[in-house]
Length: 373
Image 1 (cartoon, rainbow, N blue to C red):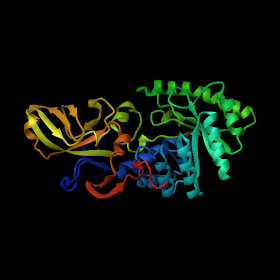
Image 2 (image 1 turned 180 degrees about the vertical axis):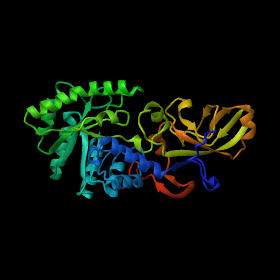
Image 3 (image 1 turned 60 degrees about the vertical axis):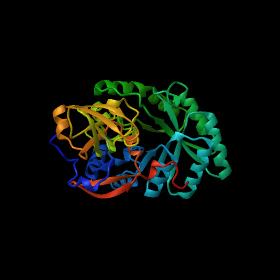
Image 4 (image 1 turned 30 degrees about the vertical axis):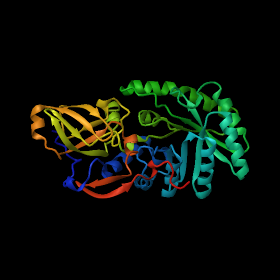
């Protein structure tokens, strides 16, 4: 068994399972590390899709972070209601979403909202909608520098596209958004080399934009894997997200990053159906299940086990025969998810743990598709 039992509850019988436990002191330390790596809170625009909770946003605001990135209208609304000063909806809007976004902007005029674009058709749609409202849409150009999921290609034509977007009368083109989620080398030196090589066309585009007589575009770049690399470039705003809660997947992949896992799954043994097998209540509905079955949860207080099955409500394990004899139905297991972001989205609320005790609950407000807008 692992001796460091920071994650255990003194009275687990007071907590139903499965449950997601959150440890605020670890989140605070992670926020401090984010700021230390970036150099200042002003160089950060953290993504909130990992946690989706106003309580965590408040902790970041207290640390001096004012700008945030999100993926949904609900997340943007939660940020605005919590006190964020600037919100980038890192998503290209369809017409229905743009109408909702306009409504959100009207409801929170004190917040600086932006969204992403990667083609002139979407820019024209926003231009026409905001013209009819008598306002201006603030946008960043979504740049594809190798992931090939969304974005305008990071090549010689990027500067020309930037100029076209900036010429629309009801569009304020603020800069470039560069997400390089395809760069995941485990070795930091290789990851740094890949990140810098992929970013080189963006640097050339910024130079060409300036030479065309436009003001310097702001550049928001990276996610958690490339965060330490982009932090070395003072011209870039960094946008890590998973760093706030961390998980087993990034903990294994990004060994040089000093973040602490701050979210733990509590599950119970439901059955011992046959020798060497046991079943817990950690099904698909309780932990992200997009990874292979052996990379969904890592148990902290159990060794020498194999995950052999999972269904909606159950997770099956094969364990050592001697351990199987010791374990009782009802025993508690604690696990770290391999992917925390979609795991949090499975819970309406989390249980807050301080010094081994559940001290309260936090709503995961932005897990819903819609809050009010």
